[in-house]
Image (cartoon, rainbow, N blue to C red; front, side, top):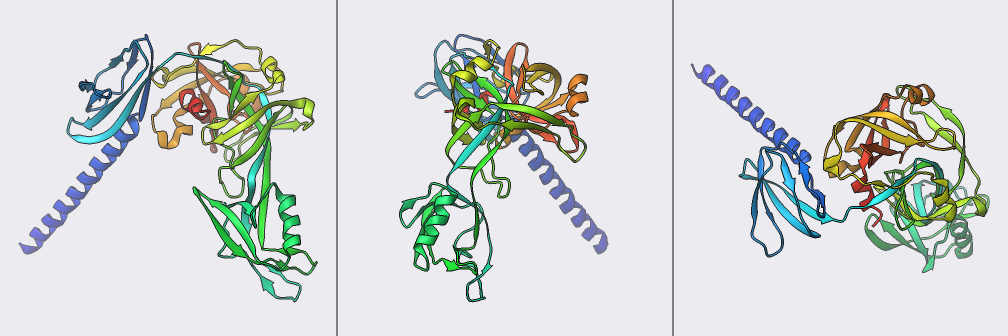
Length: 416
């Protein structure tokens, strides 16, 4: 009898734990499905169907709260720009999320879809890695060990701004075996560290680090706005070794000629190969911002004339739907073409803003040429119902016909 009671207790505990895990999984799933922010246009009726077992209280500053049910279609309308907060509660009881509701003016942009050459210069130099080396006396040295780490940015040396890799190496030789004060940015923190260079067997002073001061590559231009600003890629430029988002001092867009296409295969993404001419007369624009939503800057005259399309409206998140769509891209460096895709899933998880749209290539011509989505197509505009809804960002490594995208609403927020 005692044994049966023990078994019952264990079973009850297991069932209780399973129930709690199920509730946690449900809560987390609903949290991800609930947008952090909803935008609506002035003077336009916006419909949104979240289908959540939740309710909220919508209020503007100083105004009375309005009860809202998220279990049925929501219809928003406002006749002037404003912002609201909606306190969302699961089943009307459990706090779920604070949702920002913004009323904005409608706008249009020009979809581009053309390949671009990208060159960016880091702010200071990026530490790619640390290590040791053989000194002039035959000993092993690692002056930067426990001082610097992969992903650090060295901004100044003994108070002097670091302008690049060459300047860094020259300054090391001038300092020699004296104290070296480095001003370092690590994440959001900026601080000073001290080390002393050591002479290697070739007579060169080192501190035992590998550094990088630039990056280059090929991507796709997403849009040009009314003010001549551009957005591209739909994700940031990260260092290939550290995966660190590169902090820019400056960057440039160049004309690029596509000279080859490598098809994507399972486990091996394909690639657009571009030839970039870094001559001044091939400059298309200036990059001023690199963040997790893309690269942004100002177009040059050549870039504005290189895009032959007219403006289209920007779709808000709630206007994007599962179903047929098109992407705009160029595989030969000439005029961009539209290719058929299917949007298969949509989420509102701003923790993964570059993966909120899931799409599949259905265009037989594009699949025959590339196998699907390939490197260099990041930033290709996604259009649906005559509106720009987002940009291609990533490919599924095991299936090149599938990939992710970012909402254009999120991407354009990165330009501000």
